[in-house]
Image (cartoon, rainbow over all chains, first blue to last red; front, top):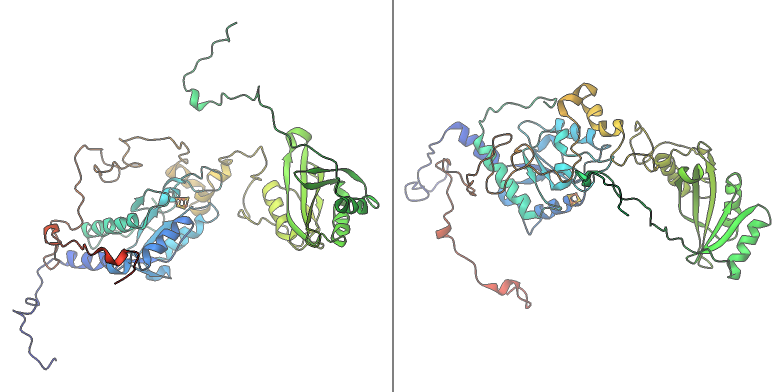
Length: 169
Length: 272
Ligand code: SF4
């Protein structure tokens, strides 16, 4: 116990919160989104810039974690090749629930300019996507906006949201 | 005289271009005049058959028999061409029924390059030059990966860029740009299995496809609706904090914010 006496009425209000459990949990979730340190192509450079000092994602509670087990958001930042698709699926499966996916850039949205034999035409063919970011490459502000949108989305959903099945669809 | 009428609906979808007036530019072949390169060519010609040799864009080109390529490269390496900077093949199946395999060499001591070419029929193999130039190891694997040309005596001839269970050789001119059937369904077959093809559906390959009503694929800026819902004209407000926020979360009011107008921190003089 602190030795000095805290006058809660004057210093920052009573330590009481009126809220629902849903809101409290979602507030916690949405403000500590841990991103997966995972980049694929040129878009990953913008994602790295977003995490670094100038755009500073840490202030939203977005911290890049180097393991899928510890992260809850995976940003598919770049061109998804067909050779790489099974690995993306595996990384996604390794993430703990609840988890969200941001598809960053034209390449991962639709295949983008790579209308070729070796590119997956949209990462949503292999994993479910929450937010699609247009652009080639989207600027860090766009990714920032997507993160804020994702926070809004999380706050809207129920705490006990349905756990997505291991297999898609 | 009138040209016969052709229906022009859907004209963008059909290839209407013909190469009736196309003249393929050809780089002139000049005789080899510089004496250093001529000496190197004659060192090869003394032992092996040189089918043709000429200069093209300041590059010496030498065409030899496919069977003797390895020995020719060995001779050239002794002449000082110690770097194999590039090698691959070109598909000439439609024109000549085979592939042209080329090796680009660099001589660092006299600053000369030479390109050794040979021609193989479809289905024939080339001898590996990996024991002469280590750089050929991965290049030959790439050549095998992209053209399906077999390389004899290669230590580990398997695909290098594409997955090992890939079907077909993409740099062949007959390979479809958007992939054959196995390529188009590759990721679905790998991850979910063939039975999921129907559920996930074919790839959307039309780059010009736009449909405002299709809210599964498009989202109108300012009029966003949820995935798969009917498109609407209502304006979606852009805001960060919802109205039904938790009571303990403070809301930002734009009128209470202050604009920072001390511009000194990004002037040329630097941070003050
Ligand atoms: S969308 Fe553009 S910037 Fe992003 S990975 Fe594709 S090509 Fe690169």
